[in-house]
Image 1 (spheres, rainbow, N blue to C red):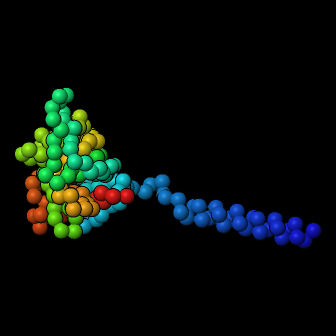
Image 2 (tube, rainbow, N blue to C red; image 1 turned 90 degrees about the horizontal axis):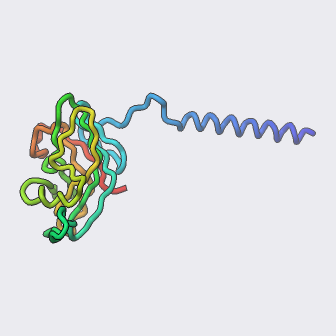
Image 3 (cartoon, helix red, strand yellow; image 1 turned 45 degrees about the vertical axis):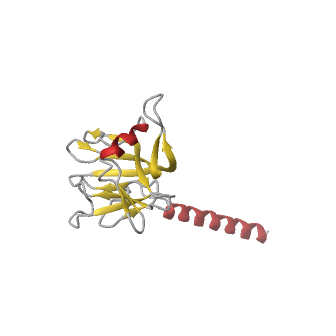
Length: 185
């Protein structure tokens, strides 16, 4: 009979320990998404927040040789290297309309920074019905779409650079803080 009491005590201790562990590991109900500060990097799929500016999440990244054309019957658009196509969710956190620019949202690897949009790249990324470049978002509005970057085949971009100000076209400006979203899971 003592062994039944011992087994019951061990079972009760195990259940209590499991409940305590579950409560300790469970995120708080009031926990906010990770906010960007200088040089913050968030993992693929996590929401990067630049307070009062923008929230960005990288949803998918693909590499391809050609982009399907926007119009039926047109020729596919070839890359000089290959296309890096990032599907991104963007939310305007400011109190004004903002226009998404692929020239501001750059991708980088350990050696170089690649800029999308502008010139031919603006029309090249129109292969998607949901292109983000040039889309205007009202305050609080969220859009999901794609940005296309023509990168050398050897390039292995790892991060999306997210400036803390959309008012600049060059996020290499040392006065502009930049946060990063990972491009790979």
